[in-house]
Amino acid sequence: MVRLTTVVSEAGEHLLGAARLTARLSLERDGVAVLLAVRFGWAEARRPPGTLLTAAERLLDESGLLPAGDGDGHELLLAQRLPAPATSLGELAADVRGRLAGGDATADLVDTLRTQNRQLLAALEESQRQQEELQRLNAELEETNAGVVALYSELAGELEETNSGVVALYAELEDKTRQLERADAYKSRFWANVSHELRSPVNSVIALARLLLDSAADPLTDEQRRQVSLVQASGSTLLALVDELLDIAKAESGRLEPHPAEVDLRSLLHQLRGMLQGTAQPGVDLRIPDHIPLRPLVTDEVMLTRILRNVLSNALKFTVGGRVALEVAEEEREDGDRFVFRVQDTGVGIPAEELERVFEEFYQVRGPHQRGRAGTGLGLPYARRLTELLGGRLTLDSEVGRGTRVTIEIPARLGCRPGDATAAVTGAEPPSHPDAARPAEPVPPTGSGGPLAGSVVVVDDDETFLTAIRPLLAAVAGSVTVVTDSGRAEATVERERPDAVLLDLDMPGPDGYEVHRRLAANPATAAVPVVVLTALKAGDVDRARLAGVRAVLDKSRLTAADLAAALPRPQAAPAADRPSAPAPAGDQPSTPAPSTSPRAKERR
Image 1 (cartoon, rainbow, N blue to C red):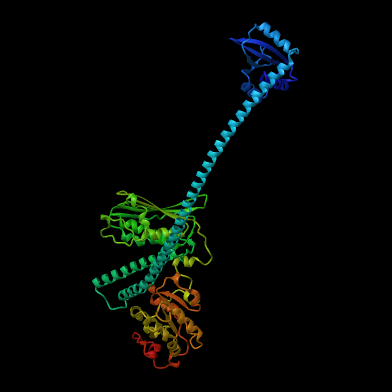
Image 2: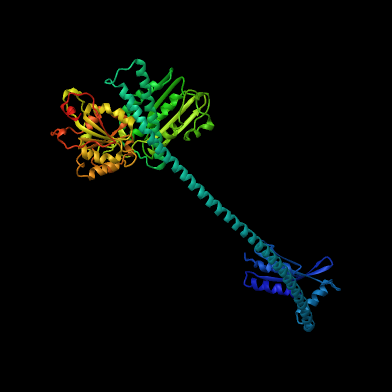
């Protein structure tokens, strides 16, 4: 009864004030048992709180929220079973009414206290049970925490060990990286040094071959002329390979830079056609277009020429029949206009698994197609590096037996600085002296009495080159003194007071830069004009250290006309009037070619 009373009290408190609220108390038989039921009814959508319904379900035998019988509002049932009565329901109802009217209040109070005590004991037992459950859960939690701490300690140890391994591996990788960078730097330096060392003898071979083929030299038989021509062509090919090797070394070290200028694309393609037409095998049609886009192309012409030459040469090398075609197109893109060069051949093709490896330096696809087609494996890697330097990209597609297509994309305007046009087209820097920029004048015959440099001192240690240059000097100079020891150059020039000094740059002992500095610093020799003859590429010459020289000439392309244009005209005073002293050992006065020139006679 206490439970029912408690729940009824709570329900009445929550429903107080509801519209048309009613409470009906009834005794109902449920089998042999009797239910004491209280039914609340109201006409609103209001609902008792969920906590009340939950408590009623837990404390009472029956409870529930039902819709009202007339469909308007709700009905809350709260019922508790009573012990089986010994009397009828009518008598029981009368007894209940009597109790409610104020019957034996003392007995009812005792019963109420007993009931409350029982409920209190039950609540205490429930509290004790919950406390024991809580203690059990706490023990499990402590055990779990201990396991977590142990696992954390284990993981922390493993992580620390792993971190130590990672740190050690990182240090090892750093060390390997430094070793690789060092090895790469050594390789690039080795290539550069070897290339420089090779250029001098190769230039000498080319110069000697040119000398033998010169019309003024002793006549050769047809077979001898053919053989010398082969020597000259092979030397030129070797020089081109050396230049490519040197450029690759420069590109890897970051020292190779493009010199953009507007390119005459029609002329460039015409030169390529003339250069490569003779290398095509019989039955191979080389197609290089005459009609090209009219939009100007601003890039490094030397680099572009080498890219196209390498790609076309590679295509011609491995195409035995069909065609090798070059296509040129313009493409407008969001990131800027581009020129696209496509080289398509019908050659042997490249297997799919080898497509990326062909861009590795010195790598060549092995197979029967290699017979009789020697190469270095540098052509495609070199072309791709140059393309990247021009801000573009080079891609390759190929199918074995059907051919290869190489696509080269470069920006239409790489960016052009004023004054770069000459350097970009010729690959050389502008001459450092106005006289050197004049067109080469025809060299007069020796007996014509034309202008000659009265006397020349040549400072060079390369005997082969000296042999090749002597006939050229005989056509433009009255007398020649050769100094092979660069340490004696200053004293010789001071003694001889020549009209000009021809100076090599790459020599043991004081190099050409140091010799030039000494001559410029000596008041007795500062006014003597200096012409530099070098096997170095134009971009490798330090012009800042050669301030004041008349010209810088390339040994591999040197002609008598070049010398005549670079050397100064003779002064009014005859060379014989200059003070001179006997030449010390190591200086080699050269006897010029027979000449009727008065100055030549004076210098003999």
